Length: 395
Image 1 (cartoon, one colour):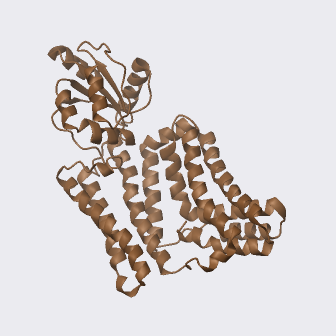
Image 2 (cartoon, rainbow, N blue to C red):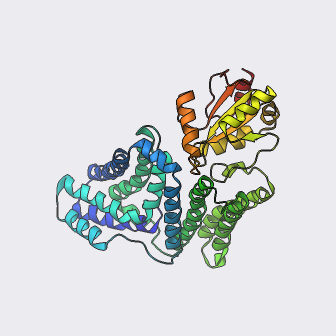
Image 3 (cartoon, rainbow, N blue to C red):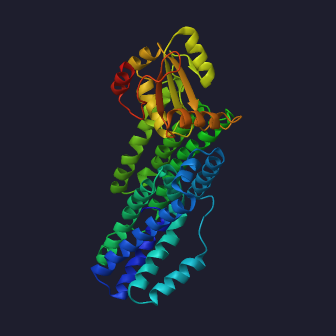
């Protein structure tokens, strides 16, 4: 809402509805049109590529590099190095058409104008949302776009219903520049998640966990430092607003510092490269792990995981790194199989094992075997409850 290409459309919306003389019904229709257009966009992308294809994209190394570069470009734009805009002729033509057309069509065209003009700021958010929400059905991308669209449409509908509120809304100014810079730091931090997936999948080793954390510390400390600049020369209200952002930013940066020396910093477990879990021997080859289990007589835990799997990172941080769980896992041969490893067909082989032997294609996915490779319990999927995992081991 507060990004420059969205906020500045509010006066245009108010002007349109004042001149049109429409009431609350038209304003509600305008908001509904925005929602339908954004949800329709999400459905169209999902139907064209397929929800499973989008899920594959979320773990594809090349696509992750593309999204990393895309977010970096948008971050540099928000920092003010250059401006990303769609052709002015598109939005101008739509706006003129909307003003010269009557009825529902004019409202729909006005909503479409909003979608086009705002895309410069909403594009990276929508793209990330669609890839991250992709699963095995249309539901997740649809719900993601629905939530996004409702949040975007609500203030526009309210300003269209009550145009006098426009007089009380803050005008565009340097506060908006500050918001863009904060958003730029966040874009940079989040972009590393995509680079990390590609780095891990191909085994480049260019973004180790410690470097990832260093950059996140710099980004959140940067937010606090930037907002502290010239804070003496702004109004008391704006000082309070800035303080609400500055304090958590510095606090989060300080929270991340112990992660440089091996602290789990679980708050970023879904984004950062996985940390090494001590106290257990890990095999990354299915046959080697089973051969070792037969030699030692130990039971087996197979962990089907992925470099791009957010829930896998969460489960590692909240469950596998739990002291009680680690103690119990010392009695098992632990086989960790990455299904999206791009080196020498390793990921394809591991994915085939999961599909053909255990009838599943989602991660994380845990299987218990005896020392001779026979399954001894129902598989375990995602959980953040260590006790649930321990009970599963005991079964």
